[in-house]
Amino acid sequence: EFHKSKGQHILKNPLVVQSIVDKSGLKSTDVVLEIGPGTGNLTMKLLEKAKRVVAVELDPRMVLELQRRVAGTPHSASLQIIHGDVMKVDLPYFDVCVANIPYQISSPLTFKLLSHRPAFRAAVIMYQHEFAMRLVARPGDPLYSRLTVNTQLLSRVHHLLKVGKNNFRPPPKVDSSVVRIEPRNPPPPINFLEWDGLIRLCFGRKNKTLSALFRQSTTLHQLEENYLLSNALAKAAQPRRKKRGRASEEFKQKVLGVLQGGGFSDWRAAKLSQDEFLALLAAFNRAGIHFV
Ligand code: SAM
Image 1 (tube, rainbow, N blue to C red):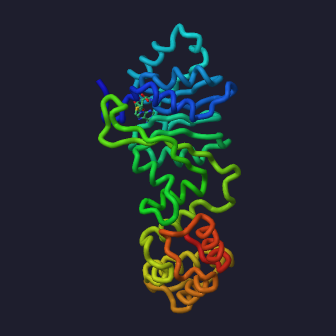
Image 2 (cartoon, rainbow, N blue to C red):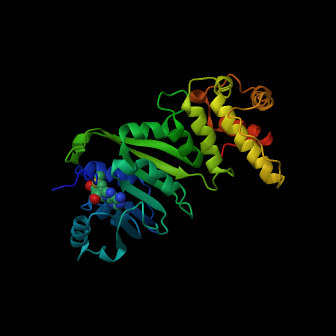
Image 3 (tube, rainbow, N blue to C red):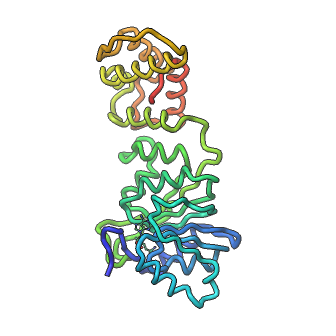
């Protein structure tokens, strides 16, 4: 029997398995990282194409089943199984990642892969359909979100195929989609925490204009705190300021000046491209305004 909590939905349709392997563009010299091999339906096909497969599996029963399945085949020496939680293990070097993962870890796993070094060539991952649609959304799409913008900052993402729930045993509640992720290498030379701070703020109210968003007193107050802190750090010592709980008028004008100067005031996060967010961040940073 299968563990729902571990997201164990075994891919039963061999055509879908084959299609995932074909679309992962494997070379005979590749090291493949497979996450959640389960009973090994994908693993056996990957072993035919790649030089080596490293498979990370949490469930000891699945590890045993996979060991049994590969034993005595010509590929047994090219499979390495790591028994553990993929979120906790140190990932080894790999060229391509293939994963039919438990959907609970979709977001943290994606960012764990995207921060892995050296960067891999591509990851072909099965996600819950709606999550996949958020990854590939474009500016103006209803699902365009912080997840979209952060993922696309670090990678190019393409939808490969939709997989109906009846291709799995037991069937999950929702349909799935396979997505291809190619890391941007090198990644854009920005502070990712600061980028995420800006994006989080902008998508807090993604349909508001930036000028309305940046007039909110909580936003201005937080930004002024950051501003004073980074200036204090830069100048080493500064007299202690009394806590006021709201931003100064001077700082508010500074923020609105950045928006007006760059022509950003009427922009709305829901419609902004990567390059527009990058321009916005750069303009704020030039004025000494930071988001962490
Ligand atoms: N790849 C197989 C297939 O396509 O038939 C099984 C996919 S099943 C959706 C997810 C697999 O991931 C299960 O075998 C489960 O035990 C394993 N798993 C769940 N959580 C995991 C984790 N944190 N780290 C590694 N493997 C995990």
